[in-house]
Image 1 (cartoon, rainbow, N blue to C red):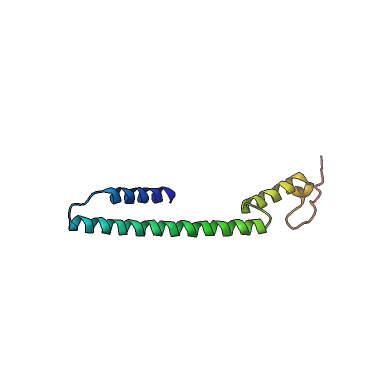
Image 2 (cartoon, helix red, strand yellow):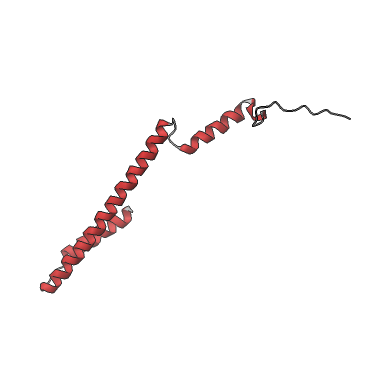
Length: 102
């Protein structure tokens, strides 16, 4: 988005510097500038919306105690693997003893 924004601004600046010889060229230049200004404005509003959404996601993640929602799941897996809880079944029943018959 930022590249597109920079490109639109560059295009607007080039159009603004272009000389005009008559009323028709002035009108075309003004229409082009208006079109580019609308495009730049829409890109800016989109960037603001995306920034707002990003901040909301980050604040929700911070409130949950994590900067990254996926890191919570990773931490839980690490805890399970560090302790002996990886031997416990999902229904929390102890593992069954298998008789060894030789």
